[in-house]
Image (tube, rainbow, N blue to C red; front, side, top):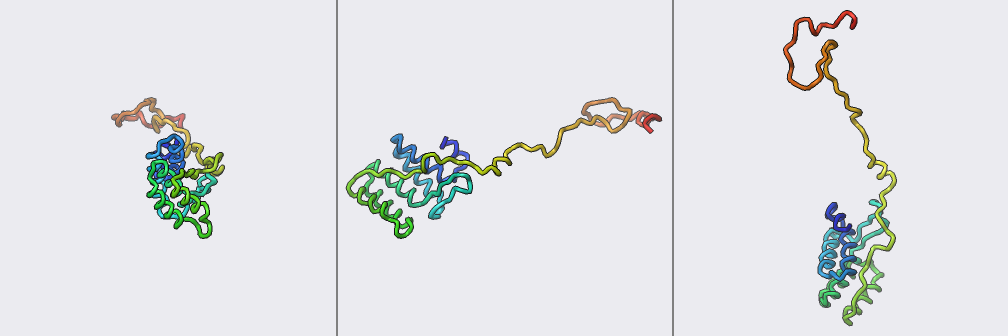
Length: 177
């Protein structure tokens, strides 16, 4: 499902973030690391992206993506890279809230694995009702009508180039007047 989501919107950072978490759970550490790198690059140097406007009640923070990247690097035994990534996460973390990153930094120094961040359980994309109502198909053109001829005495129905006209055939009859 995440593959389909990312195929439809390749710049959806939270899609890469969630797929990275699933890859970590499945033991696909290289794929998880790649997805976390993609998620961070799709943040486009923003400290966070608020997905509430799209219908997901979650804010994806850059420091969370970096923390999860470090968790994937720990699983790959890349301890030095994990420390560097956590240093970057400290820069992206709001001031005065670095306790979780300090604890993670100590765990990495002791070669202990980190638990990755994730979107809270039970959070799904739920578009607003107003947006879903607009998804119904609308008939802007109306029902199609086939008009065979505008000439009252013409009984021909079909599509072909203009036919030669007969003298008097196309004159309206007395009953039409």
